[in-house]
Amino acid sequence: MFPIFWILLVLPLVSAQTYHWGPCPTPSVQPNFSLQQYLGTWYEIAKLPAFFEKGKCIQADYTLRGDGTIRVLNSQFYKGKVQTVEGTAVVQDHKNPAKLGVSFSYFTPYSPYWVLSTDFVSGAVVYSCTDVLRIFHVDYAWILGRSRFLPAEKVEFARQLLAKENIDTFKMSVTDQTGCD
Image (cartoon, rainbow, N blue to C red; front, side, top):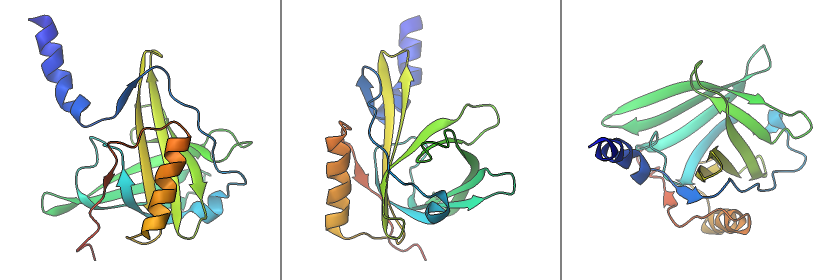
């Protein structure tokens, strides 16, 4: 009975995530990353499944706080209303500022938020991965835009970049950004 309980408890989470055997890949990140240029609003164009993102009109707003941390305000339209969650991002290594950490609770450690590529004005590719005892890993990836829609060639470039970095995009889905304004 005990194993069945755990399977039933974990099954909904597993179906909404992207799991892979082995440790996280270590993709290259954006060289010469400028946090100041990255701040502002980013719209989710496509993503790997994430249990915390089920709605439409998903966007993230990044602003610098007085203490040097970054305020992250994520919002989505879900079940007939706008839902928001506020978190904090930090540059964890000033020698590699494209590798940020983000947390949405005082009780959880920072999760990786790695900017793999961005031109700062139209699009960005972001990756996050968490190892579980180096036996398997859970990864997330986002293709972001400064507007709600990106040209198909930019989306394809982002998908190819993720694939080149050994990040499986098979489960990647397009985010509905229609009827948002």
